Length: 240
Image (cartoon, rainbow, N blue to C red; front, side):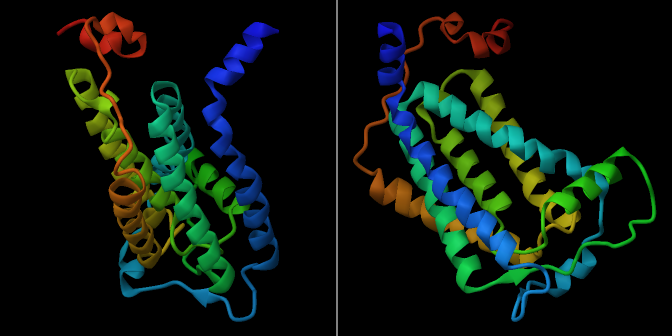
């Protein structure tokens, strides 16, 4: 029992994750009461949307988002309490703003293809995505906002400095983040307007969170004498 108590004390900084009990009910209510035929729904569209072609290959990075974001949260959770607080403040503030926008400015899309014209496993995944994700509450794009802010928190972490393996991780993260943002357009999940709004929100809140709220917070760099101390990254360093 004492071991369990000690573990709970060690990881008590997980409390910001209780935000899920605010976000999920709010999001579910928006999905329920603001359907695609909602009167006064603002349709997000710009000429660039008609130029961007549909490409089912982008369903791969789009779905990788569901692994990419939790992985960064878990990494920061176990490496730094203050960094975990920072990513939670960054992500959850933007998510709340997005929900407020969708509440007072109901919005949606009319970009999805009704007949793609071909069949393969990637198209099946796209149909699954379309069937489980309504074309409403799209502005700003949370897929884009959450991706950019998570990438920024990862590369700004002191635990990502130093070893060459971590430089590789930052490059991989950047490439994946770009592909995820692009996927929202090539799958017709978002308008260019949604992506631009999600990007702008991420950079505006970066200055608020990093340069204001956490400007006096200490983020000590890890002391690593032996790469074997970090078993997760050791295999990337053993050829160095």
